[in-house]
Image (tube, rainbow, N blue to C red):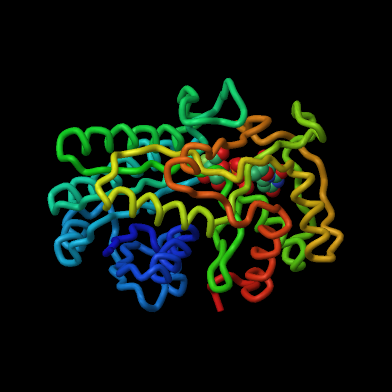
Length: 327
Ligand code: UFG
């Protein structure tokens, strides 16, 4: 299969590109390198530096490379930032996604995969969270993904372009060659590992008075390679003539912020000082996915379900690349 990966220089996109190439796919990455890194792009992937806001550039990339499928990872992704800069999300994420969809339908792309999010479920009625859970976006970020999911519904109905929306919970971990390098970094696991590397003094626990066993927030940490494999399975299903689908993607197990820090202490051998501070606005107590549907329909199951394995892979990458992709 030939796949265009929009955002293939970013964290999840670059590791999915790596796994696609390993699976024998022909891949071209389209990325503006605003948040991504050129060095994260697998050397066997084609590369087009371009911006999804530039309709001509997007269309030219799709017309030139004629992919069977498109995977769309390129977007603004921070819940907190979206509360203070909503237009980056409600306008740019939506417009950029639509530019990619329009070019895809115009050139007969058969399968489209959207990186969606657990932030669709701000106020879940049931844990673990299934696809039948009511959608309550928790921020302009979650809302932008909800709008893109709805747009894809119309792309299928009007143009028969099949799609899969993959709602990630907390992506983490690394492959041997690629890992998480955001600027600024806001995610728990890389921040904790920065402390172990001596690049930060301590980690702040955002709230220890939540309604959880140890008082800190519980999240579902899913290894990025498991996420990548889900994309490949979903794309194969679409290209084999399958129907459009939506999957919640997580490990199915919850770990608290304190458990993450404790496991990182064990993995790194560093004391990792931690200090409980105020809550971060918008954080729900517990988010855990049910990934039963993708397990039953595509046979997907996580290969890295243990928090220890997840943190070990991230730690190996962080130790080998203490400055991320900046050599
Ligand atoms: N946390 C801390 N201290 C820190 C950083 C984070 O205690 O310094 C806590 C957060 O409060 C949260 C947990 O660690 O309880 C995980 O936080 P992250 O920032 O790593 O991840 P989020 O759960 O906020 O966000 C992730 C993705 C989003 C996605 C969301 C869906 O990054 O894109 O999951 O729930 F929308």
